[in-house]
Figure 1 (cartoon, helix red, strand yellow):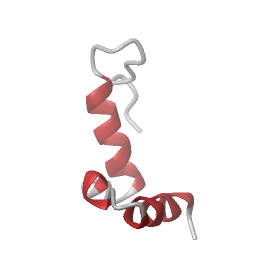
Figure 2: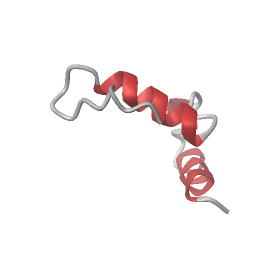
Figure 3: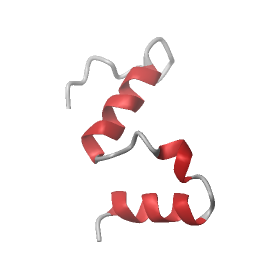
Figure 4: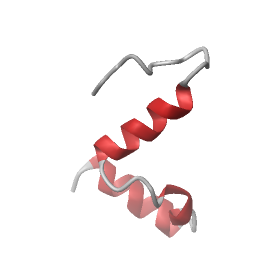
Length: 49
């Protein structure tokens, strides 16, 4: 089982699954984090993948 799937299982077990519903795949999760990093000290919006 991948780390990504383990993370999703833990989130669901703890009742936080809805918070990660848009994390449908590792690339989707990366894109969401990329968008939310815009303008922050850890901004990595220039990284494509």
